[in-house]
Structures are given as structure tokens and as C-alpha cells.
Image (cartoon, rainbow, N blue to C red; front, top):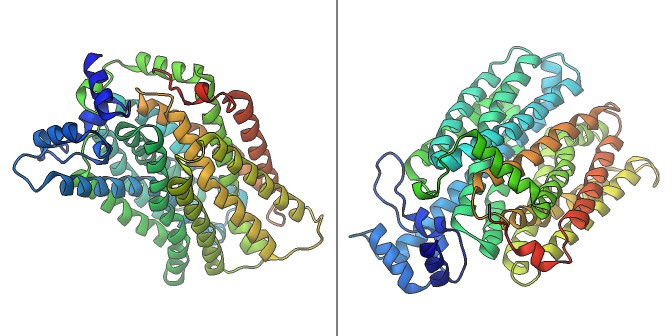
Amino acid sequence: MPEQGRVERATGTGADPAVGTGARQAVGGGAEPVAEPVALQDADPAVVKGAQEVAVPHTEPAPVAARRTGLLVTLILGGLTATPPLAMDMYLPALPEVTRSLSAPAATVQLTLTACLLGMALGQLVVGPLSDRWGRRRPLLGGLAVYVVATVLCALAPNVETLVAFRLVQGLAGAAGIVIARAVVRDLHDGMAMARFFSTLMLISGVAPIVAPLIGGQILRVTDWRGVFVVLTAVGLLLGAVVWTRLPETLPPAERHSGGAGETLRAMRGLLADLPFAGYMLVGGFTFSALFAYITASPFVIQEIYGASPQLFSLLFGVNSVGLVIVGQINGKLLVGRVSLEKVLFLGLLVVLAAATALLLMSAGVFGEVGLVPVAAALFVLMSAMGVALPNAQSLALMRTRHSAGSASALLGTSSMFVGAITSPLVGLAGEDTAVPMAVVQLAGALVALTCFMGMCRPWNRRATVEGAEH
């Protein structure tokens, strides 16, 4: 379109039309217009000034308002991406207690994690396309409302089967925050700016896995596992209120899809037909399977095999999450723009592969009987490498789509959650007395991810990797 080309030439970014127009949308429900978010801060001053004059007449100076709005949106998106770690990680120290409380085997209790993850995978396939059609706010608010109700029901579950069912609903609803947060980032940013923003989100959302097990461990000191879900309910209510009052709509009506299921399926088919996009999707999915094998198995490995208390497990989990956050910030602040995303992703995959190999050798007894410290060190390295592998895989995939960001985000999230949901039961097949299944799943996931990266993403072909497909 001529207008799109004019905006792209003016800003020098080649960003989506939504970057220039979505930020001028008012907060839903007839609220006052908001200032231009961070996406136009690097644009030509004349373009920015014109946009700000339209968006915020008779208000404070535009640069201050823009910075404030950008920070607020960043915090909200970080909160949305932190919802899954909160739902998963705050509950982790309670898994052994749930096993005893509901008189259920460990493998069945682990299905409560699998059900939540599977729900997040399927929910994204629904919510992502809906956000392309109806905008980002309405599907997000509806998902958060159902999430709160499902979390309350989890706290009241009388048996493990009911808990598994409610965790599935919780995951289905919680998917809205995951998929729409990524779509909003794609609305506002492109290229290297998008990669940097994903790293910033990792800093914010990375706080959740650091504090969630610590909070969960402390909650277990004063109440039982049901109290964990009470706290999660309060978090969901708070996040819903902030989204309702402060998150602007980033997808303007002109950029929405008016078609139904047929158009959605065609958009997804087009994305999957793009070999590099499909490759990055699989890279992210199988890398996430290594991460989720750790999330699912580590409470039993650390506490049951190595005898750690719930509080020590929470501390170790938090330390590993600190490593992920620090490496993610190194990625966003130092590497992006200086080293190609493909090279950094390749390095991250190699480190995950090396850490998983070391864990398998230690778990299999190749080095004799090892204590908690070497195992914890290998898990720290594996988790830290996720700080470059996951955000760069997502960024490289989303760079290949200028439209249907919700559908693209749904495919990325669903593939990760689905692979994780399939592989997570495998870590409990050999019982609670060995860490070998966890290490095998992690090593297999790393190998498949590296194979997909080399075979499908064609990292040696810079042009094929960077040029986005026009979906």
C-alpha cells in the first residue's frame, strides 16, 4: 500500500503499519487516547511529533508521555508472560505434598502440569486468531476472567482427577496472556528492536520463576497446597484489573482480519509452508521440551533423590532462573545488533546440548555417585542457555511474518507447549528414584532442535533467514 510504504520510509524501520497506527488506538471501552508507545521512539522526529499531536492533544510534553506509556505497556506484557511461570512454578514445591494429600501416584500428579501445559497449547490456537480478528484486548480480558475462575476451582479440587481437569481449563484460559503478549510485541516492534524487547520481557517475566517457588515454599509453611492456588487467584485478579484499565489496543481495525476459520487456516498453512518459520517453530518447541522436562522432574529429582527440602529446592530453582535472566539481558543488551541472531541461537543450542549430555552421564553413574552440587551446576548451565535460545528462536520466526501476528504467535506457543506436554510424562516412566529419564528427554530435545535449526532454518543463508514472508 502507498501509505504503508510512506510510513516505512519515514521511520527507516520497515515496521508493520500497526507500529505507526496501533499505538494511537484508545484503551478499549471508550477510554481516553493514550500516548505513542515505544515503537516510534526511533522514528523520524517529524513523524513522531505528528503522531503525538493526534494522539495526545492538550497533555504533558510528548516525549515524557511516550516513555511513560512504553514502560507501562512493557510491565503489563511482562506480567502476562509471567502468568505461566507463576501457575507452574509456584506449585512445584507442593507436588510431593499433593501426592500425599490426594493419595495419588507421582506420575498422576505430574499430569496436573501436563494438563495445564496442554491447555496452554490448545488455547493459543484459538485465542491467537481471535486476536487477529477482534483486536488484542477483548480476547485477553475474556481469557483472564476464565483463568481466575479455573484457579479458584483448582483450590477446591477434591481429588487428583478433578484437579487435572481444572488445570486443563486454567491452561486454556491462561493461553490468552502468552499469545497476545507476543502479538502485541509484533504489533509494536520489528527486526532487532523486537529481539531486544523479547529480552526485556525475559527480564520481567524471569522474575516470576525466581520468586514463584520461593513464595510457594513459604506458603507451604503456613498452609497446604490449596493456598498456592488462592495466591494465584489474587495475582490473576490484579493482572486483569491492570489490563482492563491500562493496556491500549495495539491492532487497529484496518489491520484486523474479517474472515472466519477458513482465513485463519489459510494464514496458518501459509506460515507452516515457510520452511525457515517452521524450522524456528520446531527449534523453540524442542528446546522448550528440555526446559519443561526440568520443570516437571526437578521437584522429585532434587527433593526425593537428593534429599533437599522444599525451601532449598525453591532456592536452587530461583538461582537457575537468575542465570536465565542474566543471559537473556546479555543477549538483548550486548549481543543483539552486534552478533547475528542465528549465531547466538546456534551457540545457545550447543550449550543446552552439552549440559544435557553432562546430566545424562552423571545420572547414569558414569562418574560414579555424584552429589547435588554437580547436578545443580549442570541444570544451571542448561537453564541459563535458554536465555538466548528461546527469545532468539521466537524473534527469528516472527521476523518472517508482517501480518497475522496472532496466528504466528499461536503456532509458536502451541508447538512449544504441545511438545512439552507430550514429553513431560516421559520423565516419570522410570519412577522417582532416577534422573535418567529427565536427562534423556533433555538431550533428545536439544538434538532435535539443533537438527531442525541446521536442516530447515538454513542459518548459512542470511538472506533466506532474515527476509520475512509476507503473510
